[in-house]
Length: 222
Image 1 (tube, helix red, strand yellow):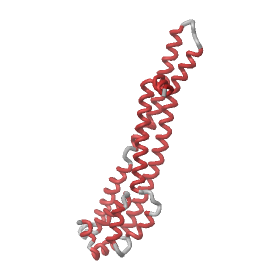
Image 2 (cartoon, helix red, strand yellow; image 1 turned 60 degrees about the vertical axis):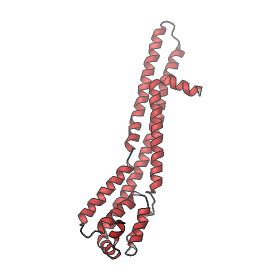
Image 3 (cartoon, rainbow, N blue to C red; image 1 turned 180 degrees about the vertical axis):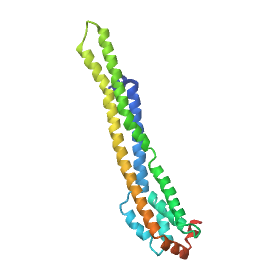
Image 4 (cartoon, rainbow, N blue to C red; image 1 turned 120 degrees about the vertical axis):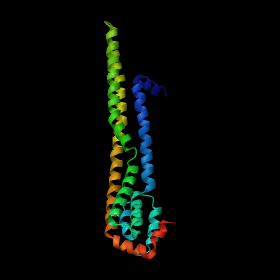
C-alpha cells in the first residue's frame, strides 16, 4: 500500500486523473460486455434462423419468439413486420420504420464508445504532460543544487517523471483495444440488421398475406 501511495505522490495530480480515467474505462468495458451478453446480438445462428421467422406458417408464434429474443436484430424485425401487418402502410414507410428502429438500436449499442475513444486519446497526452512537469521539476532541483550536483538527483527526477507516461499508456492501450473490439461487434450487428431488412422487404408480400390470415395486427395491440 505504501508503494502505491508513493507512486501517487510522485505522479501528482496528473497521476490521479489517469487513475480516474482507468476506473472510468473499466466501468465502460464492464457495461459493454454486459450489454452484448444480455442482448445476445452476435449469435451467428440468429440470422440463419430469420428464414424460420419469415415462414408462411405460425407467424404469430414466430413474432412471439422474436419479441422474447432481446437483441437489436429481433427488434428491427418485429418493428418491420408490425408495419407490414397494417394494410394502409406502404413499403416506403416500412423502410423508414426499419431505418428509424435500426438507428435507435445502434445508438444504444454505440453508447459510451466515444468515452473509450476519448480516454484512448487523452491518457497518453496526460502521461506526457506529467512527464514534462516532472522533468521541469527535476531540472529545477538540479539547478538549485548549484555546485553540489548529484547525478542520483537527476536520475530520480527523470524516473519519477516517466511514471505518468507509463500510467497513461497503460490506460490508453486497453481503452483503444476495447474500442476496436466493441466497434467490430457493432459493425456485425449493423450487417445483420441490413441482412434481415433485405430479407423482410423481399418477402413483404408473403408477410402481408400471412399477417392478414392470422390477424397479426391484433397481436401487436394486445
